[in-house]
Length: 394
Image 1 (cartoon, rainbow, N blue to C red):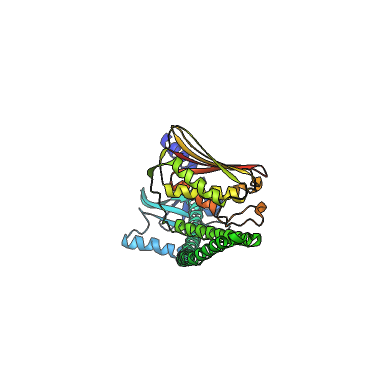
Image 2 (image 1 turned 30 degrees about the horizontal axis):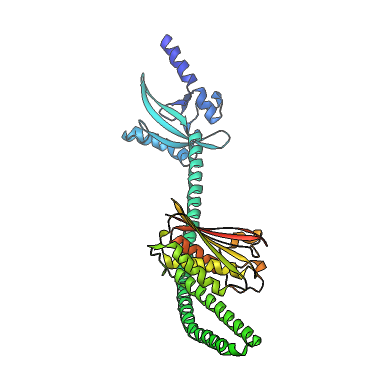
């Protein structure tokens, strides 16, 4: 008796539904969980056919299942489990897992069905399926977007390559033109310079000031044009990578004195270049040709942007660790707002006015200094003084 009460208590408190039917499919018992699942009261279902709890097509076919089993003994559901749909009292359906067992009780056969509600699991599966579908759709969209991006990048790359090829061809053409123009112009310019010098020489006995004045203008114009051609040729060589530093041991003081003498010849009236060397040593290991070009460029600028009756300080210094070349003038200076652009190609400050120049000189000097592992610095105050300093490690 105690065991019977215990079994009854277990059945009534079970989470899953439990239903028993006789061999004709009529319901005999339903535990509370089964009644809650289907929405019936016990008196509404006891004695009625189990098929009332099934939707079509199982409802019409269920009695046939039982008769076939009774006749053939072939088990279709009994002893097995499968997922089926249940029909509630309100007409709605829900999924559950059904397990049916056969019980021989006294002189009759009873079938017991164990019902595990799958509604939450199916709902979760559906949510997961929807999420997977959304994710797949998103992946497809992203894949399509990525494919379009890759195609766009590929097209852009082809355009860039084509543009670079065209730019390379243009640069080569520009380089050839600059080189050709520089060389072709040098011959007539040299002739003009020579002719002007001869005219000046032949005119000396006549002491004709107008002739002297105009010859000087011709020589200055030729000098300016030659400087421009040299700047363009130097830039073209730098851009083409044809300029390399070839460091050798040489006497810095001797080179600086030669440059001072050359530049003094083109200085303005009563414009003096004062050269001074500091340090016990005079030998350095640098490229003398590149360094000479840097010196000439810096002193030329000092001459151009300073007035007559002025001094240009040209200093070299060698100590234990560095070699310095300094050019200082008291000319027009560089506006502070424009100093950041000073080393850019073709840049000229607004206060240069009609003073001739290409805006390439300082860019070339900076690049030559870099080739020799050095640097170019400057300090400038408008209408006061400007100092450029080349610094090289020993």
